[in-house]
Length: 149
Image (tube, rainbow, N blue to C red; front, side):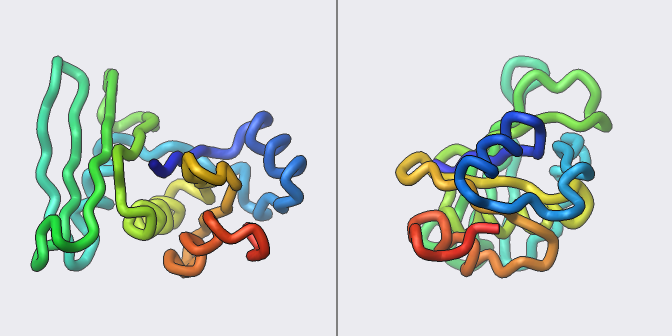
């Protein structure tokens, strides 16, 4: 599992405790709106996106390699409790390929500011910024010797 966070006081304290520096633009960090998220997902080169609506204000996005299908990288994104599709709103990943999740977060960071990401195994915070290398940042999730900021 890959978990994503915007910068707030608790996340800043966590980064400080882990010895990870916050990027200078951390105050610009916000969740994308559901409409922004859809636009970002649909812009990913080499991926197909399908959506499922659930119980009124909830939906899932399935992002799958356009050529290889589930033999390639894929990610499911859950969006729950949407009231305003144009207002910032949290989302979560469900069993994504970590590299694809980080690549999606890198694209999100271009308009919504930097993110913090971790996995559920090592729970090491890694900062994702616009222009970062998703492969390198994904490798930081599991390697305690790599810089995470």
